[in-house]
Every structure is written in structure tokens, then in C-alpha cells.
Length: 609
Image 1 (cartoon, helix red, strand yellow):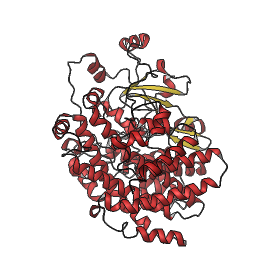
Image 2 (spheres, rainbow, N blue to C red):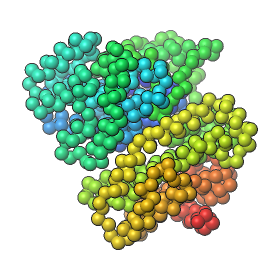
Image 3 (cartoon, rainbow, N blue to C red):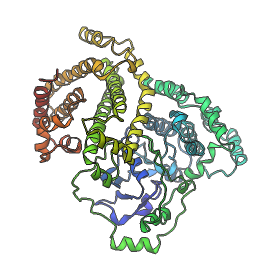
Image 4 (cartoon, rainbow, N blue to C red):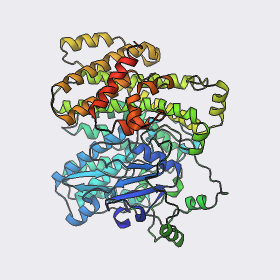
């Protein structure tokens, strides 16, 4: 079992087959550090074509992973030697599409290699990526000095480099070893010209693998050369990656570290990864509570692993020590994955309290902060649904003006709401006692982290809102109804975000969502497919909740309005978004969804026009 999964994840955790689930195609993982826990929760949000299935959150610090079908690209090369150019072209395009999904979440591929990309039925599946944020997109003033001085401050060019490594190995059948010196790497780079590779691929490799980061090609250029690359993808890389002071930041990284050589990292990625015997630093921390290890608390919303020293070198294989075997046999440190906890963990939330004791200490505050976080999550979830819908229609040559306006309005409203939330942070919110609130934000490390994460996410969203604004300015062919709709919101979508408050933007925001709601209701009436009708009802419910997003989850509203949710979840107090997201949205009765929609329409919008 261990041999099957040892090359999948290079993480600060222990993978043990003794807690594998029913199928040998699953593995359970116990996480031993908060940073990795935060990262894996964030990673579950990164989905899309050619990316592994989401890990299942069993409970806090415990995750279940599905081992993909097929074989790794490393095994594929060893079995086949050199591979047909048409297959390589397909793999290359799939890699770029997978990385686009990762980059959209402001993360990096960074640690993908032949040993953790699976190949099955002519399709790849990336199973390991991320582990460090895209610092190129985070302004330098938000980085602490110790972060700036690390050699692991990567940009998009590390992913370009890794794609080049994979394509080189597929084209030549040669498995790369890591490079110890710049001289050794230059020798490797210079010999590419002499390889028997088609000139087009040879030129691409020379650009992707260039030793100097500033001379390496970009993802924008790579997508530009692909005839079937869609416009949205090219605009993303052009407007976000190329306009973030790209050249300046390369020079800044080089100045911070005189010996900065980005190509040196493949010693981590071009070897087949294997598990450590025991992660001694973490083991010591748990066995000896008196040992205090300081952890970097400056966790951005694009989580990074703070214990960088433990993974900066390749992990060497070794058999478990006696302590590990002993704990494995008695299972004393394993908690029951099916254990029911009183306040279910919201694995879907990026921003939340991750310390159980602190949650209990400030429970009233955290319940409301979790609902605040859920508002932004739900809006983001609806926005992603609209993005997928636009992509599907675009593939059929159909324009999607209302969905395009909806994406912009959702993102803009989310930014406005978070701005207002941060403005209220020091003065309190939801009418809490001000003295208690001041003690909370002063003494709670989790609260400071929550606020900082929201602030950093806001910076990220503000950097991409212009792209969605530009999409709204496209010359769509509008019918009469769509033209009237656009005229109602036109003035609002041209104003700067900083010039508008929630109340000022509320009307155009609701107008667009209402139009989407009506359209979906009309489509639903025209289909007899029960499965599709359930999806339509669920989507309508999410839309109408987002229409009322600012106040519907307030304590005085949610227990009365979400009474169908309470009945379904068999609870008397709706104090956790888990009951809506993970129970009510997962049940399969259309009537319950429609009844909840009806209650919101009558009870909320009947008195909150």
C-alpha cells in the first residue's frame, strides 16, 4: 500500500496503511501541523480538468485521498521509451489547462513532476501541486523580510520550467536527475540543440528551460501559440501575470539573493519522492509538550508551509522506527473517523477558527465569523458555476452576456462586502458588546489570522476584478430584454469599486441575479429530467440566498428563514453553515429546495425590498 502512494505527496505528514479506508484505492492521512491542515483545506477548492479528485475531509486534520487510475508518466516513459509527438502535444495542452485552474486560485503547480502525474485513457491527472503561494501576485509590502529572503519565492516561471522538464523527458525518453551546479545545468541546456527533436519543440524547450528567468517564456506566450487556447485564458495571463511588474519582480528576487538560481529546485521534483521514516521535529513536538516550536503565523489566504527547512531537500526513504511501529500496532493515537462532534467542521471554508479550544472560548464570535466567511464562499461558488457555464456555451459558439455580468457583479459585491467587514473589524460587528469584542481581537491569534487572511484575499480579488470588468464591455449581440437589463446596470458596472457601498450596489447586483434566477426557472420548466431539475432548483436556491447575502445569515434572520434546513438537519439552532452546505445542499428532494426558496421569497424579500 505504502509503495503505491509514496510518490504522491511531499508533505509534512505521516501516511499509514493501517488506517486505509474500505478500498485500496484510498488512503487516509493524519496531518501533524496546522499549516498543512490549512493548505489541504485550501487545496480542496482547486478543481478542474486534469486535476486529481478533491480530498475528502474526514474531520479536522484527517483527510482521505483517492489514488488515481492508470500509471505515472515516469512509468509510462520507462515502459514506452520515446513517445509519439501527437501524444506529447496532447499531454502538453492538458498540463497547461490544469495549471490554468491552479493559477486562477493564485497558487502554483511548483511541485509536479513525472512521478506524480498519472496517465490513463490518453488523459493526465495532476495529483500534487501547490505548497507555496504565487508570491509574484502578492505585493512585496505584504511579505515579511524572512519570507522575502527565502529562495523559494517562486513566480510563474517555475511552472514554465517544470513543464519544460516534463516535455523534454517525454520527447527524449531520458529521465532527468537534479543539477548540482549552474555549470552542470548549462551543459544540460546547451546540449538540447544537438538532440534529435523536431525544431518546433526544440525551440519551445529552449525557451521554457532557459537558465535566466527573465528570458524564459511565459504562460501567455505559450497559450498564444496554441490555436485552440480560448480568449479567457490568454487574457488571464496577459492581464494578471504580465502586468504585475513581472520584470521588476524578477530583478527584486535576484537582488535579495545573490545566488538565487530558480532552476536549482528540481532536486526536489525530478527525483521520485518517497516517504520519510518519521518526521522527528513534529514527533518531538507531540511527545514533549514542553518543547515550544515557533510557527510562522503570517499565513496568507494562499497557504504556505512554514516548516520550509524540513522539505527543502529530497526526502530519503527509510523504514519506520520502533516508535512508529508501536503506535501503528496499538492504534492509540487514531481517532474514529466517524466520530460525531458537536460543532461540525466546515472543511469548505477557507477562513475559520482552526483551534478548537479558542473556538470554545469565543464561540459566539466565531459562529458569526463563520457565517461571514460562508457568505463569500457561497458567492465564489456561484461565480465559479457561471464561469463553467460560460465555458460550455463558448464551446458551442453561444454568447453569455447575463452570466458575464453576473460574474462581475458577484465579484464586485464580494469585494465591497469584505472592504466593509474590514472597516468594521476594530469597532465590532453584529452588535456584540464592544469591550468583549476588543478583548477578542486583541487576544485571539486565530482572529488576527482570520482578519489578515481576508485582507490578503481582498488584495488578490482586487487584482483580477478589472479582467471581469473588461469582459462586461464586450460587444455582445443583445436581444431586447437583455438590452433593457444592461441599461439598468450600465452605470453601476462602470463605477470604481471604492466609490460604491453595499447599499449603492445592491440594486444592480440583485437585478442581475434575479435575471439569472428567472432564466433558470424557465429552463427548468422545459425539462422532464429529474436530475437536471434538482440541479436547477439547487442553483436557484443558491442564487436567491446570494441576492439576500448581506442580512439573511444574521442571527435574527437565519433561524426563522432556514427552517426547512433545520428540519432536514434535525437541529433546533442553525449555528453552523455546515448544515446548509454539507447536509441540505446534498439531500436529494427537490420539494425541500423549492419550499426553502418559497420561504426566502415570501419571508425575506416580502419585507426586505
